[in-house]
Length: 471
Figure 1 (cartoon, one colour):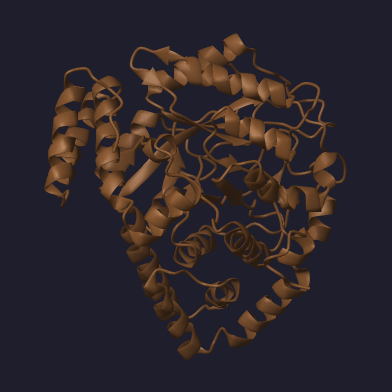
Figure 2: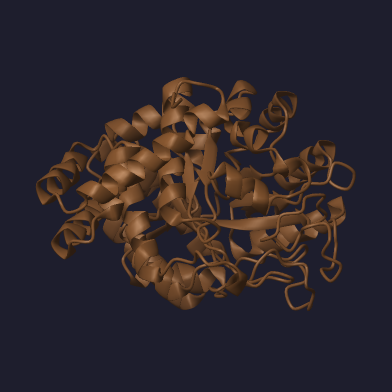
């Protein structure tokens, strides 16, 4: 029976509740008075329930869809403005004991090049990332307790934080590793991670178990309840996501929102981020073997409805998506993207080495500077800010600031100061000039005169060689 307060995965992600929700949405999708009432409700900036969101996802009325996109744009602007946070994945190891049939890391794959970075190799990867201008990483590994134990992950995080190369520094390490114990989550918290990220892949238990036939990941409940254990271990920023294309998108969309509602109900804090990856080709994996792919237009609709349903959360779109697709979804809800990404183990320090160790094929292969330049030309502010994490504005403290709108008093100034760092240290001449122009324009718009004066002072300090200012 459905119970969002339950700690049992099959109760807070209840199959019958999802199916009843989808049936109700299908039955009411042409009830335009109800549809428009639901759309206008989002103007209160309080979000939507999973059932209300499912109704909008089912609706195909063109005028209603137009209004949904308008609302998504308004809400994105209200919470995040024109800021787009920049990040990059760092793959430590692709050894894995699981049998996931959609991932080339699965243990039966004998053609993929298996690799685990040494601490010195991690150092070279981090220096390469710092030399691009990155400040925020997402750590990625396969699940293998022998080749990639928790102690290796912890040591790697310490190594990453210790490296200061030229003016570079990684200031936030988010972690995407397999579901683990409360004790291990405590260790991750102690070593200073930012967000713990774990994709559900699919919320359909039957399909989940079929897609994960062997290995620890086969355990649906243990995987689905991981966020609760992470929060019990002291990690108050968690990130959810599904891999669209594995199962029917409407089912997973509802499950994703039910998971967010569960976290909010039990812990008082919904997901810090939601990721929306789509299935991609990789070594030993052919997307044509999966029949549930979603179109770009549907992907755009999903992003927009997620934005209005969970307005406080950051939405991440990675380099799995093409430039065109990322361009489509930026204004409708995406607040964080990757840039200059490599999905191979050791792919940054050895950028031109041909090796089939990648987890998936990337679609946007531009450099970080090319992406920063593209964002600036489109009117966005590329942000390398990690201030909230380092100032303790995480979990419920972060969410209260976001929901009240007060976070904007910090975000714009911090974005401008980190963009100034990027312009000074890493940007090409064209990107530098665009960044300086953007900084000048946006700094003048800071409403609080005291804050504006502080920002101007720090911008001058950065010009003079000082680094790492934050509000």
